[in-house]
Image (cartoon, rainbow, N blue to C red; front, top):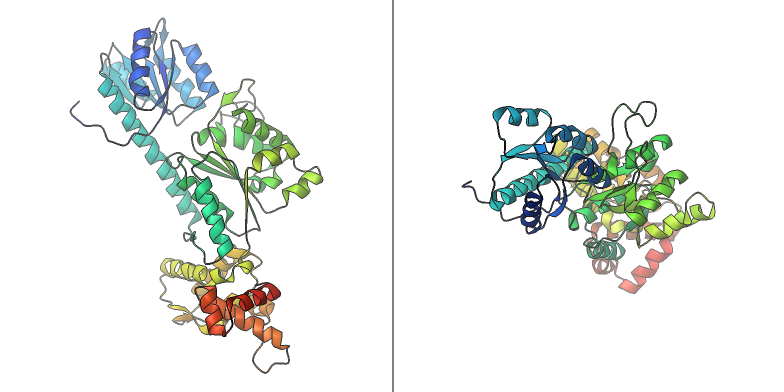
Length: 453
């Protein structure tokens, strides 16, 4: 081969199946030298056993395995792990065997004798394919979500500390538990942790525990064998196997049924699990991030959540504050949403007028960022001017805010609270807001505490 191998190497889990010990040793040596993890076996039975224990990115399978045909192993390996790339190696190369190998699901075909450089280049190409597949899956999921990229920036000191904590924790292997009200962006933070981690090139799967029926959640996570239950017409690897080497995000884990909690705890402790309909354990290298909008300690006290699982998950615990507790982020987020929905809907809206900004800043946002996103989308669709005004916002925003006017029969504190909220929504820092209001930061802090801003 005259091609040069790329500099970047994606570490792979490799299974070598060859009945010649020297070939196994040679392949294991040259692949391990490039940073890959290699398991070598001499026969199909051991290969199947290893494939059941753990997932492989690449399998190098000899065409002749003693009296057995290596091609028969291909569909068996793919049934367990459809993403595995199988390369057939043989000293008896022929067009017929190559075509048959591809027909059964092989990715490539390499003839003996081969050089270490050929094997290394092959593994690097497979690594590139796996990275591209992961990126494609991520892009497809982003397209399906079809939404603006929520910013991982904040003007709120508490949020800034949370973002910094996540950046520090991301490169580790620690389990992270994210708490917060519905709509605060827990999934966005989980994706950021995966993106900042050393697992970024591997898959990330998201499972919403309440969205999957209780009787199917175990199968969704751990997989099942064909015939494990009525309707199981084919093998299902499960989400854990599908994101081997990557991250599994369990959203609203507080809603997970107790039997599934027990199985998850076993996986966290042993890194092993058993598919429905099987009796042997499988291994997986997957990082867990969990999120909840409920108080797990209260659920533990009510015997609705396992105490041992709670402590296992509670390694790094952080709480995302609701949007009403960080009003300085409301207008920047609304501006991001406005730009996105203007682009999607082919509109030219320049921003929010002063009254609309005041309403957005004063509204308590019980649905948090998700509600803000929906409000801005509606305003863009229904708005007709070059700015979003109060008339473009849902009536609930003004009604729940109860916005008073100067001279209305309301206490002075109501006017003061509204004014402080508006100013904070239009300034970039506490110091700037204090300067505009003509007070010092300590006084502004006390006012925020008084009004719950």
